Every structure is written in structure tokens, then in C-alpha cells.
Length: 84
Length: 84
Length: 162
Length: 162
Image (cartoon, rainbow over all chains, first blue to last red; front, side, top):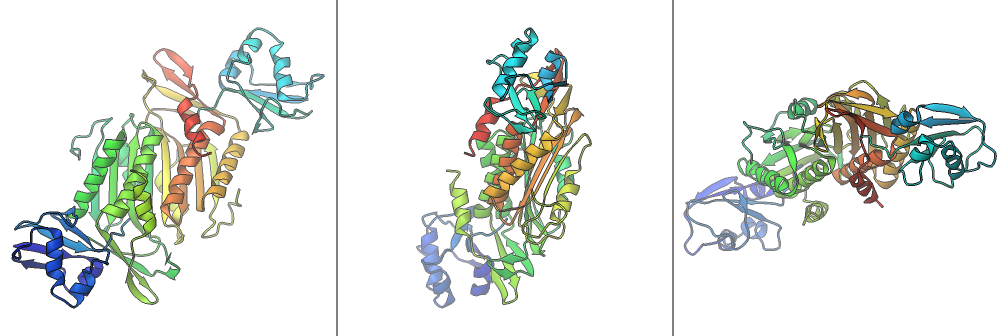
């Protein structure tokens, strides 16, 4: 299982703050998971488009496209941060 | 008249914190006044030696050797500052 | 991160807090300094909610965060600051939830023997907090609510530190 | 220097105080910020008396100053900071007289809309205060009392600002 979290604008446009999914076949890194989510179409393909400044964290560390994903991981999608 | 003030180490070694003197003949700038004071000899020539890091203010503004001195001015001699 | 239960005079402690409640900067500074005669410098920064942003009136601000990752990210930023400068204490308090103009949002305090290290570490912590810690601001303006966009100036500020 | 009796939200005031009495930083910060929703950033610095300097134990410190010139020099430094950065308020408090380790010596606080200006102006004020304001420290150590020598590091810090 993967635990996927969404924050801020993404949480609102995607209509959920968390979901649990089986690790999709063939998904081994962040880029592949993002492609898989984008394939849901509609807002998913819009919000996760490569042109959008989406950030990803894996197990609460900032991740890159090639960061590996394994069963049991916590993955978070969110816009660039604006705290402070 | 000139009002001359001494601070910190200079006040202690010169044994005074203030003195009032007539503007000495021929003294028109800081360098000339310092020469005149140095001519008192003893601790005056030691403490005001050109090799010493003495600072001078004229009318409460930091001065240079060529800063003019006029009758009625307030002149201060002190070591480099160490506040804060 | 240092063990916050056992500070020493020269190594101090790292203290990171994320919560809704407001904080008292005078009290926090006093606690940080309490009796430690090795401290010669205290640099602090308070981020405050303004009533205007990008030219629009802001009535209120809601700060969302990523619980767990927030503390982890701030701890990593504090560790990085300790690796770069010889500081004694690091305190970071960041509020989340609803805030009004003039409300305090964030507080960073750094103690050190000398001022240069305290100033540098404090500004570094703010620059990295702005770009690496998972907080998001949503503003309530006359035109409705909007998520605040990340500023290029913040990336540039963080980039300065190499 | 701005007229301290008529602050505006975005121009604020310059407030300079030199005295023997201690000060309450929490109170001062609250007074500075009071109700001004144009302030987004507050950078502060507290200089503290340490119990050690140049390797020797310091039992107490006596701060001498040049009354009149001190306020004039600090006012000029504050004016220079206002010319360089878009700040709202500047507060400088410097104590004189006898101080013990852990006692507060100096407090500088700068408010601004944005953090970069507040940090820069606050550090600039401290660097210039250290090299241009007529204060002198005398330390009481086990070997007797001694005047503190000016540090080359302070001249270098002030020199950075060009």
C-alpha cells in the first residue's frame, strides 16, 4: 500500500487530502507514480501536468522525479511552500 | 576658548576628563591641536603619539587630522570605540 | 538535533514548535538566555501577518502545514545551521491555523557568543524555512480566498547561501 | 531622524535611548509593533555581557560613553540605515554604567514590510554602532581591570557595507 497525501491548493482541486492505494504495477519512482495519477485524467492531468510547479515528498523528505518509491511509503503532493 | 574632553583610557592616563584652554596661537586644525597637546611632554607625548590609535571628535562628529578647529569648539580625544 | 533535555552552556539546545497558539517573544528570549553567561549575542526574527499583500487587503490568513514533515524539515534546517555556524541555541516557533493582521506567525531566535554567527544563522533559518518547510498560506481578500504563490525572491534568498 | 512623536504606519519612528537602566525586550517589541499592520518583519539583536573575554573570566563590565555625541552618532547611523533600506521603525537602546555577566547591554530592533530589509538594517546598525558610536568597555578580571581593545573583526564587519 501507498499512503498519498495532498496539501493546500492540490487538496482542494483534487478533492481529497489523503488516499490509500496498492502500489501500481511498474511504479518504482516519483515520476512513474505521478504519471500513473495523471492518467486518471481531468483535474489530475491538469494539476499534475509537468508544467505545474508541483512538489513531492517521500516519507516526509523532499523528493525528486527519480526518488524511489516502495510499498508502504508515504507520498505527499503539494505546491511550492509559502510559510514564514 | 576650547572645551577639550578625554574618555576611557585617555581620561585615566592623562589624569583629567575635561579642560578649558584658550585656542593656542597657530592652531587651526586637529593635527595642530594634537601637536600642541603632545608638546606638554610626559604622558601627553606618549598617549598622543602618532603611532597610537587615538580618535578625535570635533563638536561631537568624528574628525580627521585636517578637520578645522575654531574658537568655541568642543574637542574630544578617545581610544577606538568598543560598545555594543 | 541536540537532545533538548540536556543543554550545555556552549552547545545549548534546538527547540522546534509548531502549533496554533500565539507565543510571547519576551518570555521565549528570557527562557533561552536564562543564566547562560556564554551567550553574547541573541538575534531574533518575528514574521507578522500584514493587512496587505500584492496590493490587496488581507482580512485573514490560514496557515496549513504537513504535520510530521514540518518538524522534520525544521529540524534538518536547524542542524544545517549548526553545521555552518558556531551557535548556542536555536528556537523556531511556527504557528498554523487562522491568523489576523498584526498577529505573529513565526519566531526564530539564535544565541551565540558573537553577533556575526547569530545574525547569519537567524537569517539562514528564515530563508530556508521559507523555501523548505511545508507550510502554505491562504489569504482572505475582498475578492475571496486565494492561496499565496511562492515568491521567486524567497528562492533567490535561499540560493545565496550556496 | 524622523520626528518620534508622529509615526506613520509605513515610515514609523526612530527611537534612540542611552541610559543605565535595564530594558524589557518583550515590552519594547510589543510597543514597536502595536497595531501597525504594515509591519511584516521584525529583526532584533540583543548584545549580552559574557563571563569570559579573550580567555579571561569577566566579573563585571563598566560602559563609559560620550553623552551628547552618543545620541548624535546613533541618530546618524539610523538615518544612514533608512537611506539604504525601506524600513519602518528603528529602535536602539544602549546601556551605560556597571553590568554583570548575562546582563543585557544593547538592543536594536528594526521593523519592515519584508524580512530582507529588516535583517540587513539590523545587522548594519550593530556593525556601525560597534565602530562609530562613542562607547568604551572596561572589564573587571582576576588580573584587575582593563579597557577592552577595539577588534579588527568589528572594523571588517563595518567595512563590508561599502
